[in-house]
Structure formats: structure tokens, C-alpha cells
Image (spheres, rainbow, N blue to C red):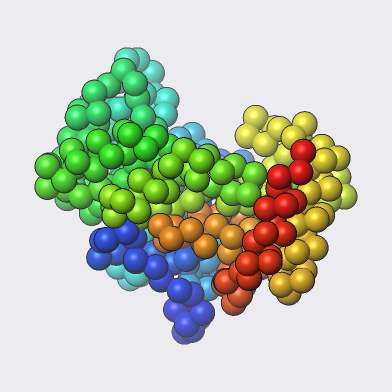
Length: 328
Ligand SMILES: NC(=O)c1ccc[n+]([C@@H]2O[C@H](COP(=O)([O-])OP(=O)(O)OC[C@H]3O[C@@H](n4cnc5c(N)ncnc54)[C@H](OP(=O)(O)O)[C@@H]3O)[C@@H](O)[C@H]2O)c1
């Protein structure tokens, strides 16, 4: 298998916080489209297209596709990416329900370290680059989860660690605890897009800037709502049609369509699609090193990477976006 020779030319690589590691400005996640029922050849094309366009970071979790996303990506990396492991950042996470009994869920040391062993087996890898606590677990002391992450690094099974979906005060505590454990926290993974601004409003971005932590934002397109995907109804192959538990079709109201049309007009004025503008809008945040997209087809990845040709915003464009978003 060969890859295009120019794959690193058109992609910015941003430093994560104060660490030594850089991520491609766009990363690809495997929450959807990498399960047992999804076309394996399409999965292969998604990974190839990404890598050819300079995306070096693939984001997984133990529970994506009930474990099958790790199995499928593991197979493709082993065959097609043999010899390229050192050019890839592969992440996984634990913390959501995975197996039966009292140890199959949460942030305990037992769950986090057994979960990582299971992920490595599915991925057919010796180590992951970033291992995350997928969510805070109010029943487990933060110290225990954090020490399990530090152990994963000491065992050589993860190079870096991160957290996902933690609030600002827990984030500050994790940063302190991991510093004491000698394994700095690398990154925070959180939801952020024009329709979900909790990371701004809760003070999370400010916390990250103050603690030197980098951010990677997931669902930057609000699972496809911030694209042209739903302008003419709900396509049968879209996430809203195929996975209503994640993207409830009832969210696609006339008001939402009107907003996306108005945002689309701003994007058009910039010479971009709405999806492209939504990604650039995410990357304007100082701590955001990478936006973590999903894709059901290679063309979406190509369109999204092309967004990076016009990153900046004028003050007028930003105001226009705010005005549209503040409408009821
Ligand atoms: N840490 C966490 O708790 C957490 C939670 C959620 C997600 N994540 C991570 O974030 C990743 C991305 O999340 P996401 O899939 O919700 O991200 P997203 O980029 O907001 O949504 C992806 C979906 O948008 C549509 N899309 C993408 N590009 C498009 C384009 N150019 N034009 C039209 N439609 C386009 C596709 O929908 P269709 O499938 O309908 O074509 C695609 O599946 C996940 O895979 C996962 O790695 C993490």
C-alpha cells in the first residue's frame, strides 16, 4: 500500500498545550462508521484519505462500535499502515460500560487498566499514543483514576494521557495530581461547536489556558447539523436517520434549518461551505490544537481538510455568526 507523497504539505500541526507533541489540525474519530455493520472497504478508504491529506491522529474508544471500531482500525493499521506506526497518533479511552459485572465500567484502577489491556488486544498494538479517562466517575476518587492513567504510561502501554468531559474544577485537580505523579496531563477532549458552547461558558477553555493543557474538540459539526446535510430533509444514509439515539431527528426543526441557512450564507461569503466554516470557527480558540471530526465518506474528509485554506475570521464575520446564533 502506498500513500501520496505530499500528505504533510497542506496540513498545519499544532502543539498540544505546553507539551512536545503536535496534532494535525483535523483528527478523525471512529465513534460512528467503524462498527461491525459498516462497510470495511469504506473504513479503509476513510483512513487512507485522512492520512493522504495529512491527518495523523485517529481517535478511538473501547466502546465505539461495541469494541469493533478498535478491531477494524487495528486490522487496517496492521496491514495497510505497517511501517507507518511512528507517523500516527492513535488514541483510545475507557470509562463507559464495556463488560459485565462490577468492574466493567467507571474510573476504577481495575477498570482503567484491564480496559487498556483489552483495547490493545483489539487494536493489535503494543501501546496507544494517548489514553483517556472517557468521563468523570463520581463514585471513584479522582486520585485513583489519575494514578491508573499514570500507571499506564509507566507500563509503556500509553505514551501520554488525557481526560474527556471533565468540568473545570476537576480538570484543575487532575492536572495537579498528574503533575505530582510525574505524568503530565496532555489534553482535554470536549464537545464544542456553534450549537454547544459549554466549554466557553463553563470557563473550561480559560482553565486550559491557565493550566497549559491543550484541547481537542469533538462533534465540531454538531454531528452533521452544521453542514448542508439536512437542508432538504433527512437523508436515509445520514446519522439522524440511522442512529437516532445519538442524533435525534427531532432536533432538526424549522428554526434550526433557518439558522444553518443563515450561517451557510456567511460561509459562502468566505468562499467556504458551512462545514468548513464551522471547523475554522472551532480552531479560532487558543487552546484548541485539533478538531475531531467524524465522516461517513471520504469526500467529507477532503472537504473538511480544505477548510484549512482559510482559517481566520474578520470581526464582522464573527459578529454576524454571533447574531445568527443568538436568535431564538
Ligand atoms: N470524548 C467523548 O465523549 C466523545 C463524544 C463524541 C465524539 N467523540 C469523538 O469525536 C469524533 C467526532 O464526533 P462526531 O462524529 O460527532 O463529529 P462531527 O464532525 O460533528 O460529525 C460527523 C458527521 O457529520 C457529517 N459530516 C462530516 N463532514 C461533513 C461534510 N463535509 N458535509 C456534510 N456532512 C458532514 C457526517 O454525518 P453522516 O454520517 O450523516 O454523513 C459525519 O458522520 C468521534 O468519532 C469520536 O472520536 C468523543
